[in-house]
Length: 219
Image (spheres, rainbow, N blue to C red):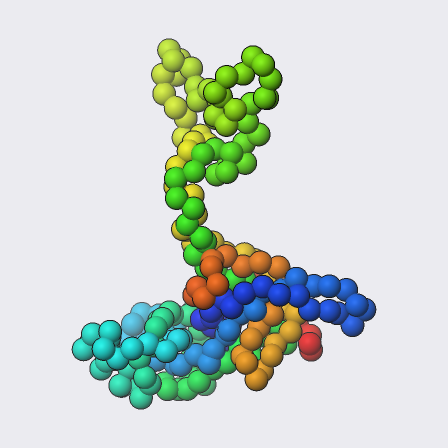
């Protein structure tokens, strides 16, 4: 069984449980995804399936990509990603087949991977959650500084992984074990509890939780 799909972050909202509890959820448009290519052990050295998601413009696709899509009779998509599968799953899937987020409806937890929002060059308080200096009369122009970064003579260098100002965000982030709250089949929307990385409209990958893949149940 395929355990991952490409999705698009729609935004956050809230739903009510049967007990009246408010649950903050993120809506993820999970499909339908197209099966673009199947990769097997003999030809490629590993077994995987390549999925496409999102409507793409033909004029923006290169000639090799157009032929790649035509081979599986699929219109050009905006995003392409691979997911590892076993031999049995590879045989069950066909090129040109559509797969929706319904595969997650009976799973309890999923892992979501996306690119976090870029925040540019930031200081240590925003980037590393430093506390900063006390705002007393004796402190001048040093409220948001990082403090000492090491001794001068010994060891005469700055140790690795020292919290310093720099680029923050715009990196691949995976949030594990997000609870599946609901799946809206008519809109292909998967509602997961909590926040996921990236801006609204950004591409994300949704996969069955690696830490708790055995926990299933009807929603």
